[in-house]
Image: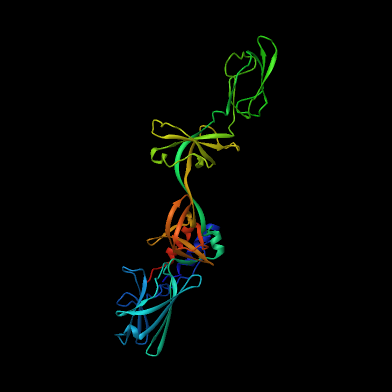
Length: 412
């Protein structure tokens, strides 16, 4: 059974750290009062329940079988035949869920009627009848359970969610860089060679289709004509000044960066798994800007590093991304709906199990999970948690630390 001695101290310290308060003080109990007395154990390593000369040894047996209760009974130190004893055990779990266990004779012991599923955390009530007398015992057998007030939980930023259906998306991580689409640039030259009378734009300036860029006086006709932008975009190249001759050179370049192309390198081990139409979630290296897109072109030959370049069109209307940026992308390979999943951020280890912490009222308790497929932020749950359960998604490590400090045990 666990001791509650450390719980108020730990939660007080955590709350003080979060809120910047001075540390609370607690009266220090003596060593004898701080530690609960260990239960007496019998020859089968079970808990001894004693009333006068009548003794029941209750043990959880799990060697080669799922965990089950087994009971041995003695009277005045002598074994009692199992068929002479009537026995019932009720396990009251968190949330007032009751498991009612009956017993039947087998060899020299009484065997429970159901599996004792995890967590082994409950109030144990025993009712026995022998020789016309009735005997009753009750004790707490808690593990992986802690109580944290809602105000303290809020201060420690403990977040919860309801377990239920989710769509899992299997992805592969690839790398690449952003480029300008081939049809998103316009090169501006003089239609008729002549003298540049005026330049109306500067490098990096945003222009709209039809905006005035240049005025040029033709060398042949000596008439002036205007050059306007053929597209919306940005002046990405300027190689012209007033008073110069235009010649046949490139004067300006207008680039439309509202749409970019992510050129992603996919290596042979993943090449066969990526298809046209695959969704892409992209992050620019060095910052937190994200964008989405779809694979719409796949090269038909490999690069010198054996990678195949796959191109995804990226919406950049907000202008947060630029050509040349290196990017990391998660490319969707498969998508499937599952009836029950939890967020991976809530997973913790407990003994040999992967668990989440279920929340009932102001109490938190481990739930041992049977895991299925893992994809993105979600993990499929095959067993150990019911649909509709409230569980911790953020800062579950705080609860784990509190439980470990409280000395929660696994007492059979």
